[in-house]
Length: 385
Length: 86
Image: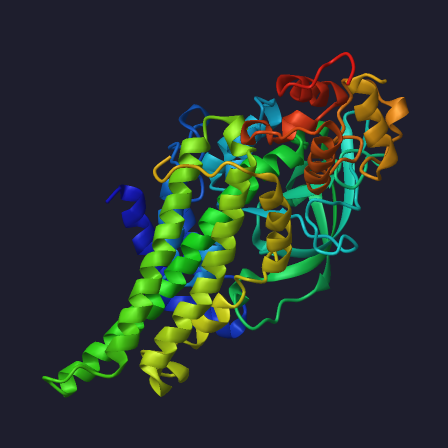
């Protein structure tokens, strides 16, 4: 176990202590995020050259899996932060402002959020209405962001926008905006079924700053090569965490039953065995996609190839479906004890959190995108290739 | 009989994939900047396969292949389309 994993476990203990309250009050998991910050787990991906420890995606995936078992909202915030961090780490293009910002990410353990969703694009984050306006080395930007998760608590926000006011909707860039240079006007709140602690409020965001804050690489490349694959990996990891804890609760329930009636296998054990099998499949899917991403990392061609995009899309779709299925199976095992909100075997929060998975970047949208890609590919890779 | 380049340009002109008129773009101009989306790229690829009676191997199925008239012609040539005339 690395020091990071040990530190993440400790932060997970803090997250678990506050998880029910965070869920009930739909508030930012401040205690858990402070623990992650104090343990320097926010700047993990920052390379050594920029003053960070230079951890890899596998470390982040492991931590998301751990946190997902304790408080899914904390895990989701950590995951979304690391998606932004990986975009910066991999696509700063040597730009001075971006490198300095990475140094701050490591030294000050900044929390990063993202503003990709926008009113008027019908949920398509690869289209923007708003545009960057440049003048005399400065930029200005105004966005009707339908969702900026934990926007009010973030130190920096990565905002997508059209490159210029004349650019087509799909020609986008990312602008790294500091909280202090941004003004937020609340558009809508976040009173949801699950994932209540992510505080994914909508804002009218206005920002300005130096032109150097605009990332040099087109968003299309950042999205395909880094944002999409890392999103689907870290999300799937935390959903696996939710499913893992649900199965752990079901196992504890069956064990308690078995103790009471020694010699007889409790009826729930059969379904527990079934859920354990599903959990194993879900885990295998994640680990295999993680290995595929790690193998592709060195090559821009591999990262932008269609079979890779199909694999990452498919990971998201299957993981998001399996988490709901597995939590449902665990609920069957625990019965009313799982259905209650006041029992040690309660699965209400797990079930509500799990249902967000198919909706955040809607599975139907991803499936429609994959449907186009599968018509184009033709070579199937070998078993171990 | 027209060159591959002309036929690629004609194909790009008749469809709604670009938001900029292809006639105003140079051969090396970035088609993504001109409005080509990743979704449209797949449709463009299938139209090229139909028009030139070829199949793009997986190794050519990436963003860069369809990023300009030049790169498309280069890709078509690499899979056996005669550059001068078809």
